[in-house]
Each structure stands twice: as structure tokens, then as C-alpha cells.
Length: 265
Image 1: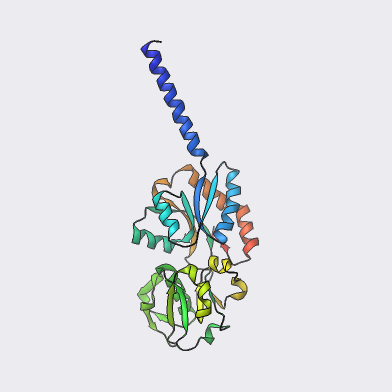
Image 2: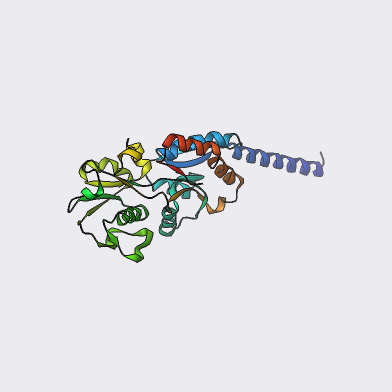
């Protein structure tokens, strides 16, 4: 075999190897991070819809709000689906993540629960009230309490209000800041607590029946699919969003959660 033939054979082998590697890479399932409860349940349906479009998905559950973004940043995940935009924006600001929103998913109106009272009006002086300890969800709850007339916040506090922004608190409510996942288990020790819908459902609470108050459905807290900035234009991203925003997934959300979870697309 002459040198030219050898070179052509080598180039052909390299091309075949390259195509094989590419095919193998596509055969690997996308790793999608979710929190337990509705996000995980919904993504099992998304997974089936996506398979029809040739997209393989591995759903990975997390028990808190911090690790799914850390795993996405480290490359252990290809995308995650569990957070709303105010939370994502805060994480990007605080941790420098290079993430973007690929598409909207669902809205979870946050609820207030209690084992001791039937109405927010029944809160006693000095009542202990649980709120999530992350800035966006904590601020979200304080805005609900302001909307219900229990407190007043500094006007400039915005979506990221903290207990330090409370300027009027007639009932002297004591805010107990805990990890969002811990709030359902702390109900016995609190007079009332705000609990994100996914954690409420996981704890056996029915938002429609058990919540003594709920956030308005018209809020900026629609959840989303987050991907790394470098991946935003890859074909699988649009396929993933298309699968999530399909009519099949919409019907599942409406049937399974009966208003506790609302399609945001």
C-alpha cells in the first residue's frame, strides 16, 4: 500500500471513529435533576414523551434546592427542573453560575399550613412562623403575609424581602427561617408555616384542602428548565422543552394535581 492509500485509510478510520464517538455520545441519556414530588412525577411523563422524539432521559432526584444547581455547574447534570426564575437569578448572582432558562414549566402557589389554627387571623401575639431560609422563597412568603395584611415591608425590598425588611408587625410574629425541605417536619413546633407545594405534597399535605392560605396564582414564580449557557442552542434543549410543554404533559398536570400545580406554559 502506497503512502497516499495509507493516508486515505487513516483519514477514513478517523472519520468513522469520530462518527462512532458522536453516536455513542447521543446514546447516553440526558441527566435531568429534579426535586422529589411533582417535579419528579412530571418528568417521568416528560421522559416518555421525549423518547418518541429520540431523546433519552435519566431523571435524578434531589432532596434540597442547592444540590441540583451545584450538580449542573459541575457537569453531573445536563439540565435541572425545580426552580423559579427569581431563585435562579439569585443563584446566578450569588454563586456565579453560567445558567439560562430554556423554557417555562409549572407554577406552584405556595401555601401556609398549621396544626394549631384554622385561619391566619387566628395567629396569636408572638406566634412562631416558619419560612424558607433562601432569599427568594423567604421573600415570596413575606409578600404573601403582606398581601394578607399581617405585616408591612419596606417598599424597596421587592421580591427578595427578608424579616429585616418588615417595618410593621402588629402581632410581633417571630419568623423561624429553615431549609424549605425541613418546614413540613417542623409544623408541630410552629404556629404556622409556609411550605412549597412540592414539599407539602411529599409530606402528605393537600394544598387545596390543608392550606389555611395560599399565594395568588398570578405571581412571578413560574418554574423553569435550567441549562448551562454553553448548551442553550444545542438541539436536545429545544426537544426537551418541546416534550415538557406537550399537551400530554399538560393533561397529566391538570389531572394529577387538580390545581395544586398549574401549567406555566
